[in-house]
Amino acid sequence: MTTFPQISLAKLAADTTRHQERERLRLACEEYGFFYLEHGIPKEQIAKAIQASRRFFALPQATKERFDHSAQDVYPATARGYSPLYGEVLHPEAGPDPKEMFDLGIENEGDRRPFAGRTRLPDDAVAPGFARSLLALQATVVNDVVPKLGMALADLLEMEEGWFRRHFSPPTVLQRVIRYPSTGGMAGKHTDNGFFTLLLQEELPTRSLQVWFAGRWVPAPSLPDSLVVNLGDMLQTLSDDRFKSTPHQVVHTGPAERISLPFFIYPDIDARLTSRQGKKTFSVASVMLGNFSSIWETGNGAGRARELQ
Image (cartoon, rainbow, N blue to C red; front, side, top):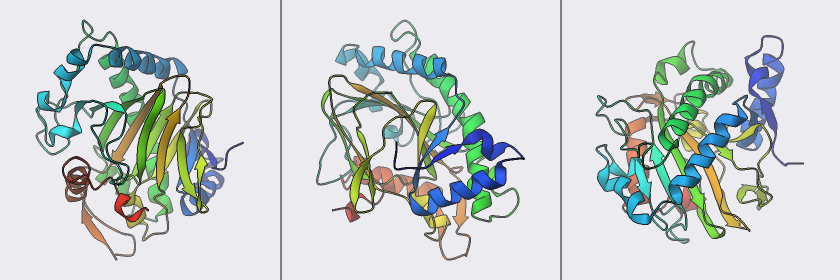
């Protein structure tokens, strides 16, 4: 059993079940801000990405650092590439997190806007299958999952016809691979500041992901054939605080390391958005750049981390 609702992507898209499933989605957004989504992504595709990621993180440190932030020709540089243990601060009180990561995005070499461009990725001679499996998984998530869920959320917000396609063509995607070591792996408490986050977790007995709900930390274990969805600060703002961007953290201790594959989904970087009731307006680029500065430059954490005691 899990505390959080389970939503079916197929039912959200089907004519015969769309209305009922969207009402369940509305409740999940208003009451929890976290839910499970039955996604339909082939298990083999996820397994290949996890296996290739584990092989990459097992490489010598000097090899991994050839692909770190300093090797990336993007802005900000911290949006792409390898980050070692203790490289990121998600909550200022917790300090740098004991996890290592690799970030990539939608690969378009000619796009010089913030959070765009091309990632310097290891080829198959260095990390067999790493780039191929991650980019294949990205294509499935961005083309199959993001539009169906995003359009359902836009409908729940009662946005005008075509709102989602206009502001998410293309979306801004921060794709991440995280390795939490077997002892002491952690991501400090924070909120995500985007539209929504899609998380593929390894199916491990250790319940590492924890969500702040009803005044306590509640585990969100992996479920077969489902990913975890959490709403971000941008979506909470656009809903005029009807939908919840819920604090969460990772505390991983167990017999094995943990690989996580989150996709942080944002609108087009050039978008300037206004909430449904017209109360709030923001620039996507300004919000994203401010959040990255808080994480990587000032150490004040991610999202609303400074509000979380």
